[in-house]
Image (cartoon, rainbow, N blue to C red; front, side, top):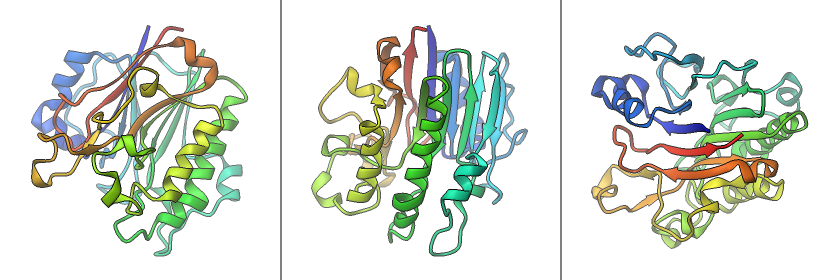
Length: 266
């Protein structure tokens, strides 16, 4: 069995200072841990990840964005960002000229049975200034990236996708329709992964609403479970039978997101 966890930690230095990352690792003992929004470079987090190989993709801008993979199993290869062919094909700057390719948002690790990709998808922003970037450029490019890997072996991808797929994936769908994280364009971008054959692993086991991975800091939202499911683990359809469990872990504190996980029997 391989236990894969994904967590937007909203700053790895903050969760290590609080001790929440250390207690999480001790309690859950993931084989592979994917982190998003690390907001740091390797060596800045004051923690020893004993038994884990570390792979980082940090943003050019200090203290911003960033991803990391910690794994007990040494990968065959690890790459950051998109291939040069995909980078050339898609235009990644938004209306303000910010280039999302320099924000440390993707890491891909090759293992014997599958590729593992972790992603921190750009936020559309309150004013939707990055919605076009998301819809026309980032989402199609990330799908192309995963499909290119899938030609070689099955893909597991996980992370903060910054979108609630359906009305069941957020507590208050009606007032949030058309707002960041729940626009038709962002939802369409997610649906394209489903249409391409990728499986939302959590929905293999649990249906309905009330299952969330992110909560606003306002109005005691987490305690009242008024949240959004925007963190996911998806797998190639060929891995469906290998998925033995998929969970959300709202009891794990330390960030405005909680971890999500999948257990594979390969």
